[in-house]
Image 1: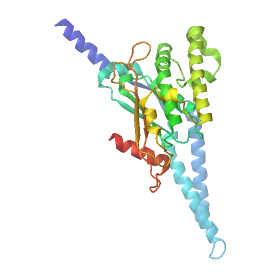
Image 2 (image 1 turned 180 degrees about the vertical axis):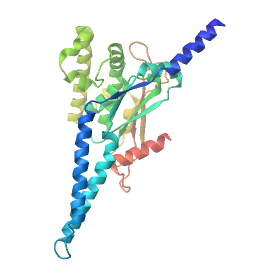
Image 3 (image 1 turned 60 degrees about the vertical axis):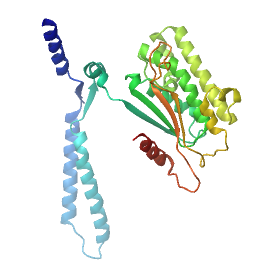
Image 4 (image 1 turned 135 degrees about the vertical axis):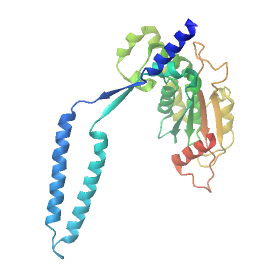
Length: 302
């Protein structure tokens, strides 16, 4: 039929549309001239070393050391020309990617690692988490895991606050194509972004973000979470017993379940999955810091 033929034709046209564009960088001629002069200098230097070999006892050890260093530099310089000789940049067409593959887009697991809440402020950590949750990708296919190597209730509290703010931040980002999508970076820039939306809406989102960060920073300074806050999520009970950063049970808490029909943002759209994880730690075993946390996280998901 005509409709089926039209559909096949549209499908073929979609298949032939490129998913990215290759853009060449300028200044190639100038760099290649520079590279040729450097290559000539290296060859002349090696020729000099080969024709001026000192006799034994007249500084041959220093000569060998200099020769080894120059050979290492020459090899390194030659290898790096593979990315410097013809530099290009790939510009993806995200809309074409979604149009071509649609539901076949793969699921993406994103890991964020943190440790001590005093050396890595949770208010900045969750800003990274929020930027990833607002990524321009189908929300139901995104899962964000916060790996807390410190196993701190303060970090868990900050992530819980972020799970509530995400219901406002994610639709705001997607509605106005906000960049950057980290609220800390976005609100630290000049107020020139206000023309993307109404000043009232912009001020409301900023006020919500500042109130959230103030609550988190206050909790970090005090070092404790109020009983009223703990009653809002069952995950806080993981810290009812005496835990330390180097001696605690494994903790896995799902703050947002992407498959839950009730886990929606303010506009009724599904939210990405958000999970807090802290691996088990015991004093008698070396934990290998963040590298060990990443290994444990990968093993738990495979």
